[in-house]
Amino acid sequence: MTGLAHSVATTSANVADVTMTSHLVRDDDTRVYGDAGYTGMWNYLNEEKDAPDSRCCVAAKRGSIKAMEDSPMKTLLLEYEKNKASIRVKVEHPFHVIKNLFGYRKVRYKGLAKNQAQLFSLFGLANLVLAQQCEGRVDGASAS
Image: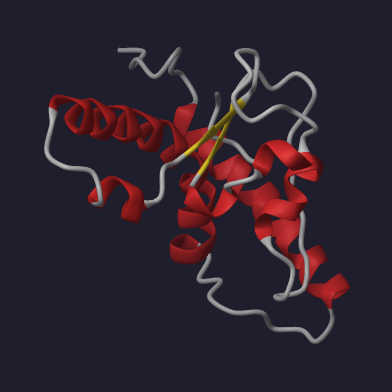
């Protein structure tokens, strides 16, 4: 997992993110992590929800965890969710570059096609910035 963006898909605001899952996941991806908004992702990837070979790993909804009584099972589930979140956070790095370094906060053009073209350029540039930051490192370890 490199932390670089390999796919970009844009839709109008009334389309749920989870419906675009099949356009963003590659065939060679062994695991697919999503936040609680991606519940039902397996339907769009034509996989069974609880199948042992399923690639989907979706975060539990906060309400379901809060509803559990304090027990060792809840502690274990919280640790499991924390591990899933630490993997999902890699996806946020290109967004940090685009929003904070490039200053992209809102769309500038009318029409999906022009905004999509701008986002393709921004994600390509963000990949260059992130790749340059990782230059000289192997598996996250410093070269020095």
